[in-house]
Length: 379
Image (cartoon, rainbow, N blue to C red; front, side, top):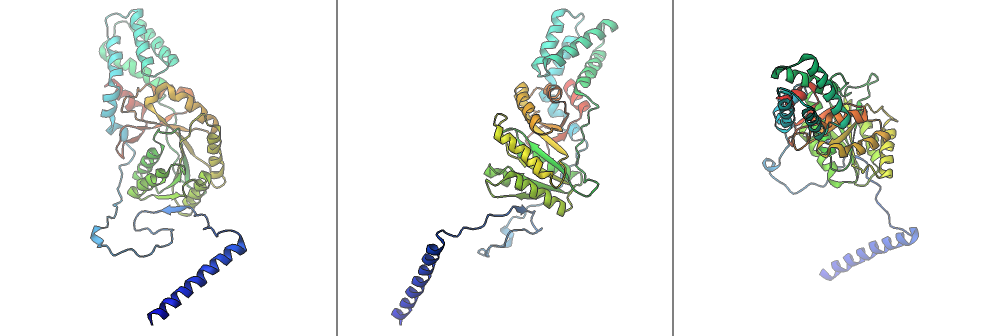
């Protein structure tokens, strides 16, 4: 009996193997699986667009962690709450300038020292000279100044160079036709684009908006997973594709899903690229053009590492030539960065700083407030 069963099994295996060989000989190729469509990663409990997998081995429910959706703080007042970090990192600039300006009589050497201090703080040569010229004129007119007058005068000049009236609000609300606002996040490798994208999602969710994230950085395996984690924490869906897939296709699907899901905002995280790589820069333009087949791109946020100072200006110029930059996010402004870079980058690109990163925490991204920024420096 055992020999009979064994014989039947061998017969079945030989028939199956022969059928496969016959099919290969007829088609001349091996059948390939179709490409995977973009995947929508949803927070726990909201379902998934992927086919259900085979049931796993039973695990007690109490050991399966279910991520709790967080409620981030609103954007209003964020920079005020983070002022202490700015004061610690940028206070030396304000203290140094105030100390020089408070001297009994200012010589040409003193004014040169003030100018050098501003240039060292990455303000830039032309803005530094403009500030010094205006301060010298006021000092000649007013004569001896009290410490409070000195502080007020310096505050006015720094604010004038930063531009308190520049439009710094982000376009994040749905358009009149119902399509979501679309934000592209761009920049070179290592500036913190994916982290900034995730933190921006938290800012918007904290303001009560429905957000969809598009993981268009398909060249870095960890980018999509990192973005999915950010989305999971605040209840934002993430649209992503297979590793190495076309970034423009993923961005297109993200906007398409945002429209279908009645999202307020879709944020597209793009791959980091060197400003010297023409092909990669052209691809960035393609991503924008493909998105605009469905909805206009409302914001293109360039993420710059504030610690690179004036070295980041070349990168910024090239990005501005490829896509229409509407705002800047300065990361790592709480570290070794020099606050004058805010003035320099705005002057170079002609667009405002809209967001600043002031730490490693999830809620350390804040809308830029010029007055709070200057007050933190001078405090």
